[in-house]
Length: 301
Image (tube, rainbow, N blue to C red; front, side):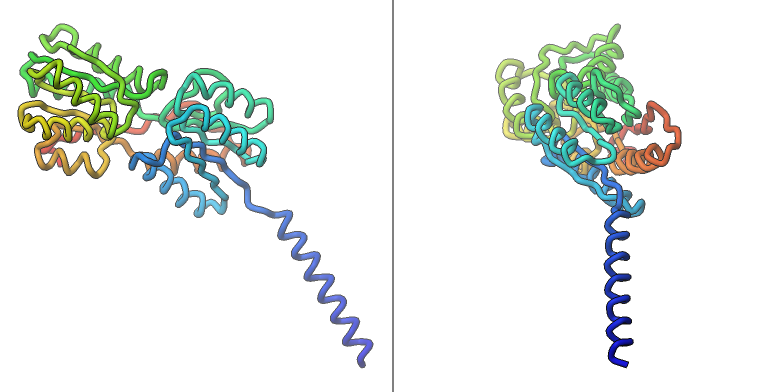
């Protein structure tokens, strides 16, 4: 009897060990997400959307924050490639700088999907974005209405070299052509709220009679709101942004901002994860997906 019990125990232990080994072999696929910054609520919302969808899909999602440093992002992408993630989702700090990393992923046989900002070179399976030119156009059209087609405008630009920066500027500039709205100064504030405030303070010193400010994102717009308020000019200078983050929506409601353009960062990253899963399963995915935009003013809140 004792021999039989011992034999059953051995069989149970061996079976358990084999089952555990099999479980290890069936490890969930892993996606890497290299994000430009998590100091911006927009990208925090994007990450949360990705985390939620990865959980639904049964995938792991590793997120690394580049803190708006192209150099740090290059190192982080190299780390993700060394970890042999199954697919890499990139939100580039700099569209030009990230190209070398995309090529490294290509050589490693790791597919790449980009979100919000494109890579200037290297093979990307899909890019999810808004039409950034349309965002600039929507702001310009609203500003033309608000200023009756006439006024002096300052522009706060995003990160130099980023595709979103170039397109949000181009869409705006092309739309105001033929009006009497003039961009009298255009300076970089790197999509950052603190820099937006500092740059705006300097602009107000040189251009005290501004009518409006167009910031390429809400973080810079909110920095501009702070500087304008400190200068006692709230209500005299109209401020426009892009992203529709919570603080910006409150500023629109309070009359501190004239308008912002609503994106859907959680949906964008949710779709990026969904399409990553499809691609890894051998399904075809579209090379470009544009997320719809909506202009938000006090009237449409």
